Image (cartoon, rainbow, N blue to C red; front, side):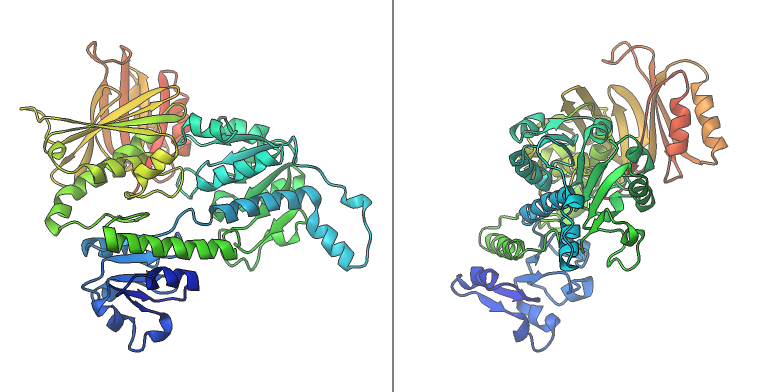
Length: 532
């Protein structure tokens, strides 16, 4: 085996490969004729963030089986090109979870005890003991937005400080929350009850700007906010105003929308505590990331076990062409249905029928789970099942034989939660067009892509007309308008109707509120389906 380390790694990382007899390990200082030439006979490539692994570079690597990224982001790797060449791309999520959690707690203590001010006044020769009286974390309510690996690490440590811990994450099973002393609440209750609020979610259309003027207004006066996740979760102007008005007692920010931070309104705010994206930057975390990646690459080369892969496993070109439309459809179906789950998710049931039921469904299953969990944390089509298990979510699959006269290959997805179930089924038409065919027992054919507005209403005259009028008044074009209605044979309330409207607009907030206000509308949700 030949492993090319294109960027510097720790001695412990290098040692993992060197322990294997007969393996050739090429370090950065040994690359004399360019990386492309070195990859001509390489089995594995290890990079960090500087090396760009594009399609052209991969053309120089006919034997390459795996690319390892020491870190989470894979923006510098063309994963599509790697997938088509049968190359597994791995990253190392979670290896820095403890480091991030410790900084989050450190920032809370910083705000509670005014540590920067104490240090600055002492260095200035001042003894301002009285003005530096602080508060304790003990007895305060900590709200955790996002209960993935990092959020749970924060919870475990905060519990040791005697904090009351509440959390919001619809994609974690109640049993996992209970085991970590977290009381699950709605997102509004999270904002209302928290003395400290810490953010640990990924960036998605649903989480972007989640800390805004509206959410800040319902928070406890004096709330202290910690963000070690993504800068885009916060609307900066709203947080600045909250800090100035006193509605927000303090904010500790390690991440920003634009990095590096060179000019910011936070610079002039005394109760804004800033650090340059260092949450995962500890000696231990960087060492753990390198060692974890080396072990993953080694296990794949020796045993074919792919851990933390961010793309599809190796498939023949023909296999990939056949299964790809159903993988895409399953991901979109999962994302579509995730918005309709009442309560916290407990299990996912997948039922395959037709030709798709006769083949390998692992990738389709993972794509569906990936769609369901996409708003919770970094999840991909390889690690989706493992993350579901980690969160206490059971996954069940069944296969049904094809029936004559029906739609070809169909996937039915059912989400069971603490407060009820939601189900939908979909198929692929014309080889590349994912279509919704049922939703909670109502037959309806609608495109499963783009911006969709789902409306449940009483089956009475006038509702559809009013919906169309509202869209027209807001200059929103209708790309597709699908209708369905309940029947006596279906397990849904009689007299209920469903509309799935595909619109040419990115932001549907204004029309969603207007349609929701109609007297005959029971529920409405907007969903933007993107590639996963």
